[in-house]
Image 1: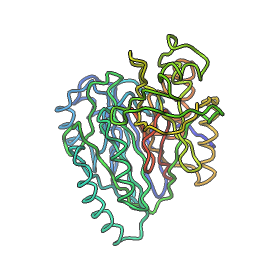
Image 2: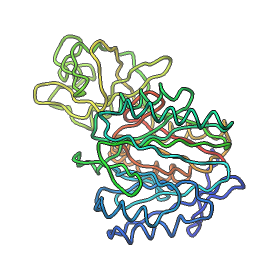
Image 3: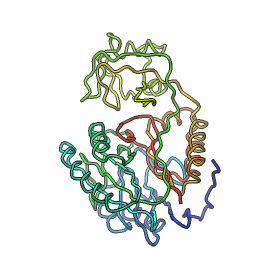
Image 4: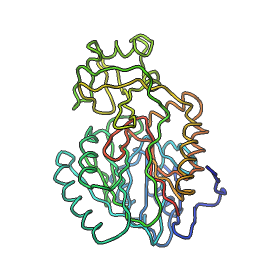
Length: 384
């Protein structure tokens, strides 16, 4: 991929068909921060503003400020960090405006998530009516409460109901506090909620999933699980944590988040593999996951590839397939950033993402089409 860095005072990536203006603010005052960001990304013909922000801001004041100062439909959420023009951004807020005669965005609120099925049916009906009246291509972008534990049924229902519309998304974060996450909709920050945004466009786009793990030859079977709680109690008929530790060549007392992040489980769906990451080792020897795991699933232990080279290779592949993107809307798992920090490569990875014009956030989980995943980078690359 040919990667170009914006000049320090250049805030826009401009093309005849799509104009993208990025910005960020670390001002602790919520109104000053939003005004600062709005001044950086304001442009004529804005069709949508994407805003990602720390949970440090008062949610009521932030919701009001976003509605007051930012142009176009605004979509965003709290994060575990942002992906901005400085790479990995901790704290503050960042985002971008997209301006084009060839793109429109229609956000739909899903709230509460306990009744998502009937809401998805209504959304799908409206989406299908819109698609029947146009020849534009469509994709979807989902933001969801990252502590709801409702991502699996929600993304599955959306994808099945919408037919041919490809979807990527991310689960909102709260800077690793794991207490409360919010999505934004029309002046309010909400939990127990999701926002699905339909994009209609004639611009070229490419939906993708990136992970720097490959399946190993080590297989295992989940023999007892509680999917609703995302708990695995037994693997291969034995205590989950104990068996998992043996399979990766360590002991249960040495299991921690860093060790587990280097040895995630992977599930094969069709011809592709999806990461299932461990979030916690419970005192009773069970394993807590960031995704639901069902009894009877056959999984494999993931083996790591060099993260920088793997990401760079996939970004180059995207450019080869569609040309240089004007923007990439990205949802990157917080576990990936934590792993990169541990290896001391987070700065170089962040710079690569910034040069590739990624706008997004560090998530508590990612979605791609019908699947909820972890330790993954999902994205939409849009050409200009």
